[in-house]
Length: 400
Ligand code: DI6
Ligand code: FE
Image (cartoon, rainbow, N blue to C red; front, side, top):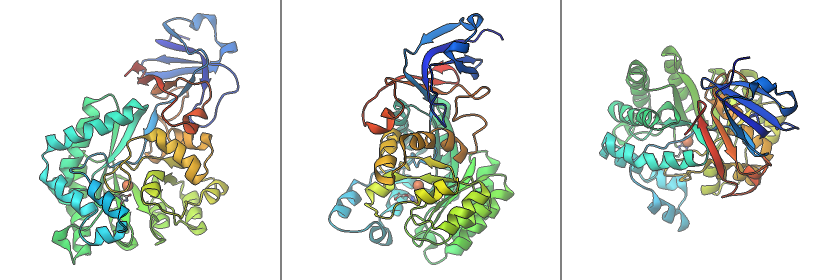
């Protein structure tokens, strides 16, 4: 075997799915993971290149935040205060606040203003080990404003050492111009937004908000069909506040993931299992909205549905720019094990983006996006908030 560029020795390995039982070595070459083996099997010949002695520290895949709304204008701190005075999220939305207030601020902002506002949010995630982040549009709700948001997301990925996956969320909320014409707006999404985003290479996938305050299952199915026709991946915000059957419909349409899913029932879970769709859990929104209905974690386990975990970072329901905090919340609020939570932000987060052949695990042939942590126990990453700290963040085999 040829010499690696970098070799980590004496690593406590969490490979994205499980923790190794003995000290491990990980070799990287040309930006890819070349070899993963127990220290006892490491050939002497391979001890070349730059050698990093991890001294028992935990090495994980670079973290994947597979569901964010990082690009937006304005702030919703006032709405946070209104909710503390007793108003519900749905009440605020129906009164023209909520998502639509962010739409007004996002439309008013220039591309550069949106970029400057999003940068510290992205950097906060990166500082905690995120190496891949999905970013949705959905606060423009016109063809031009949705494309503007996606351009900002692409620019973030060009200017910082992080992989950005973009998702067109045109069907996020009904813009005031289409107040009594939801079907007309869906037509705009299908016939104008999706083709334009696809033609300019600005979107990797398409998402919808399938909910009483969002769009119906039938409307979402039209969006999925248009996305498929343009070769774009499908995702859905489904069963967050009620059970409409949106998750099963998304799964049947071939969705990579369905997200939130607090109200998902067993038939829905079965549909995910049959389609190979990932269930993305978003404890930040559950926490901020003080929801009480927890996602059906035990059913997901029983049916073997992979669970991803993400911040849902957004100005309304999850103004939380910490994927590490989600690890803890997934365990405390949803009763995931620390290992399940870690898989949610690595292997299963990657799968929720359709990138499982490239990232999310520490295995030969995958991209060397890696995090070295100042602890020797992977469970500490979910157990504790604030510590342990990140020792080293690597993107494609280089410190970043
Ligand atoms: N569900 C969410 O949690 C976010 N979007 C959605 O469809 C909330 C977006 C917001 O309140 O601004
Ligand atoms: Fe969301």
